[in-house]
Length: 198
Image 1 (spheres, rainbow, N blue to C red):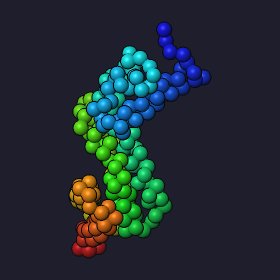
Image 2: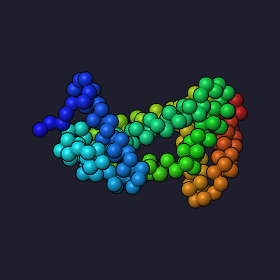
Image 3: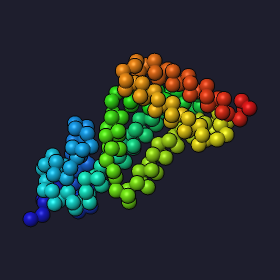
Image 4: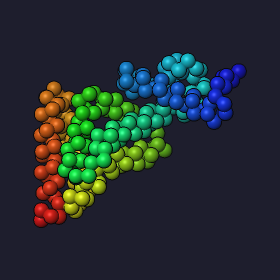
């Protein structure tokens, strides 16, 4: 017996069901980490059969890949809201770094760490890589405006600064001080990398 269709069309019903499964998986991941996201657990949380889950996702790893994509989009949206319509590149960088590290300080990044501990299917890795590049691309325009010549080097060094500040926040250091230090360090370093400084 097939499940009752509550939405006006089959396409809308499938979209609703997929959303229901992703929401169930996300709540499980937030509560117990990625390893708690199994097809059986998601089916139980969503109130449907395991076989129905397989109509939408090939495996729990496939479902986790969707969670990774969703979390990257959530993070990207947080960064976009934080910088708003700011035009000054230094202010933009400072706000971007502050939001990236606030995401760490509020604990939400632990979900990403957990999700990344599960091997995603090979056929989903390119899609995840593209989403991560989109996230980092939100910092390109201010770097260009500052005159940074080698964007890849600048982004890599900025990411390293954020990663190190994240480790320090996770270790219990004061988040506000870590954010300030990361902002000062990154802005000074990026200014030094700019063409105008050479």
